[in-house]
Amino acid sequence: MEMTTDTINRLHELSLEAGKGKVIEVDGRHYAIDRHGDVCLIKPQNLADNTVEVTTLMGVVDLVKSLEERKTQNLYVQVKSPTKVAVFGHLDEYGRRESLVIAKAMTPDINYSRFLDQEQMNISLQSQFEETKDRELLLKVIGNLKEEAVRNASDDGVSQAVTIKSGVATVSDVKVPNPVGLAPYRTFNEVTQPTSNFVFRMREGMQSAIFEADGGAWELEAMSNVKEFLTRNLEDEIETGHVIVIA
Image 1 (cartoon, helix red, strand yellow):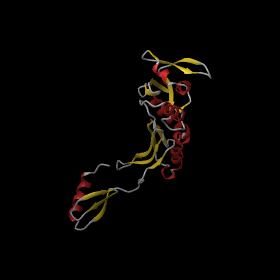
Image 2 (image 1 turned 180 degrees about the horizontal axis):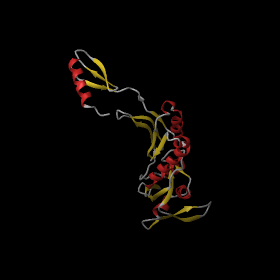
Image 3 (image 1 turned 180 degrees about the vertical axis):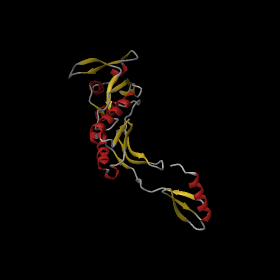
Image 4 (image 1 turned 60 degrees about the vertical axis):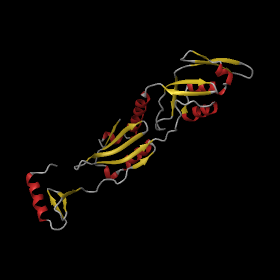
């Protein structure tokens, strides 16, 4: 709200009269005048002091549905990243926006671009990645790999081929494709983990590593999945205009 000339003049007059601290009301707003005559707008303390923090998308849904004291206001649910969702209110007359909920996904710390030994890579693939065809191929390769196989691997700069043990007394040549399609756990567990391309490389010492190779395109897919989940579970609130989901 813009101050009129009359309002400014009235505040000036009252500030001159202020020998002691006092509170006055002008045009429906309250102002504090200290003993020096300085005027300060008093803003009502009707916003949340703290933002609620959760780790799941259902936590966001449950909290939005339970905010009875905000039922008459618009709420905005913003997908800020694959691992972060924020809920905030509309701008009030003082230009303030209330932060209500922050959701941060709990995701594993995956060692991209770092060579791991045979056991470490096996554990990482099984515990930090969803099951895909290429994940199973990599597990087969590293699970049956022998040191001499890596030293003698054929390498055309794109794909590597190694000889692995395929039975009790037999061996077979396996060409590891590149890139490989893997789906690490890197967004909220309630949604599908995006599958994206990785470069898989091996070196002596029975070590292997995966390198991201999709330019970050997976993030857009993950955010779209998160938005779709929230939209589906807040359908009633969205239809009434109470909630707006953005990404």
